Length: 238
Image (cartoon, rainbow, N blue to C red; front, side, top):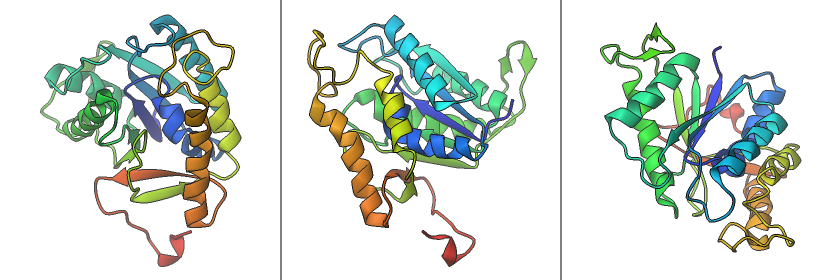
């Protein structure tokens, strides 16, 4: 199966929090979308790797993605090295996505910046034919995605492009709420974390509303890019 978009996150819930509005919009247009989680989020203060697995599955069903996989890298300790790059390259060559959405280039959680650079490097290396990979017993051909975009997470990084997600905010919030152990729940007895507060959950909406306000729409998500964004016509701009 070839994917149009592959969204990659260091942890289950990174994608839902940061770019699920964009994904929901493109899925509604018939695009094939997949999610790749690098770790199971096993070091998270709340919940367990097993609960995160179940929550990620539920979120994927809500969003309607074609495939979701987890590479089971070590949460907090994976590195940008040959072994990790090759595992991502195998996925890129299997699904041959045109667009990659991945972690913020710099963020509060160390895995986000690491994941960002790891994925970016793997996307380039995946296009080199002399790098040989075998996946599920099959020799793979080279593949390099056309575009790599980095979504915005904890820090308010200034975006290079902003995507209108008006009409898809409810779907985004529904996906996030699938992670019942991670986010605000007044009845929860779990330890409090920076992302379990009501303020953090509210920020998902008010950040999207603020970006939407700036571009003249209801809600939006922002991205940084690795090369100049280009349009075919000046009238392509919203």
